Image 1 (spheres, each protein chain N blue to C red):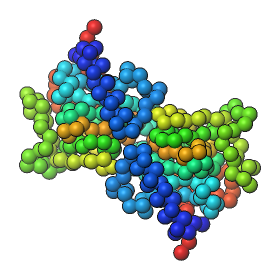
Image 2 (cartoon, chains in turn yellow, orange; image 1 turned 30 degrees about the vertical axis):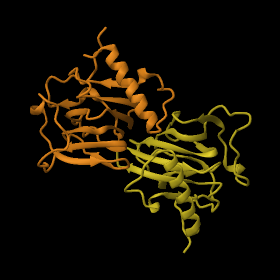
Image 3 (tube, rainbow over the protein chains, first blue to last red; image 1 turned 180 degrees about the horizontal axis):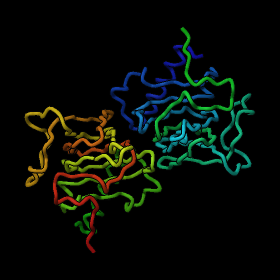
Image 4 (tube, rainbow over the protein chains, first blue to last red; image 1 turned 30 degrees about the horizontal axis):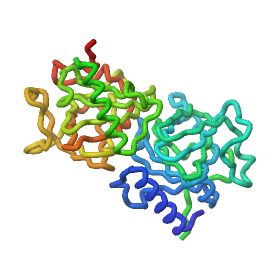
Length: 183
Length: 183
């Protein structure tokens, strides 16, 4: 649960970050078009992210992900959806700032990202990939992953197969993908 | 057919335009990674475009299209490829500059774009859409379209279903999609 004020504040910060990166919004110019996702934990400064969805149809999807400093998208995966869909596949391309992405695979001894306090049990994959502007990485379907922005935040372009957030699987049972706003 | 010098010049101009727009390349930093497509007409200043392919897999594709002032991508369409693929679907999002996009539909009386001299017979659709930074338009599969950058050029993000350039159909029979470079 977020307050209206929290949502508006994160939208304003996201607009500032997009402008700084030279990314122009028009029909999405209204701040209301920036989705603020707290994943139901109500600690948006720590866990969550902001999104602008450019297009999401039955064939492909493109978004901009805007993350404030050290904001973390909690560990989740995109499971298979029927026989013909192995699950959402995503390519992350860092546009601005820095992001640490963690996926299944050989774990790093000490992660550069800091797991949100109190949520340690819900982070289990630690193969670290550091993305700077111009770097990109493709996350295979049905693969556990989580990511955290660096000290200045990050903007990430996401290119993917169609997005069906309602089927995302999070490790943390407290998480609810769709933001509830008070009042 | 292009000369090595022509290719290099267009790559340098494209790098300058990308930098000006705040778009960072890294593993694609080498100019060789910028594709210069003259469509076989050998008049790259007039007909053709430059491309950076970020990702193209069996599920989705994302590219940056870089066009110098008044450069034109000739009229073409992406036909169905088998029963399960109605043809490539593309979303164009203008990032920088201005672009006029022409698709099937009600024709405008006088196009803002200038059809390349001598190629008038190969341009037949004139429903005009003007895209500025932040504007976007989705071109349905199997739809004739062509586009021209404005007086300062344009950078366009293309999000799409998988790209299979070899199956593109151009109106102009002189066109060959894959660039030949002299020497």
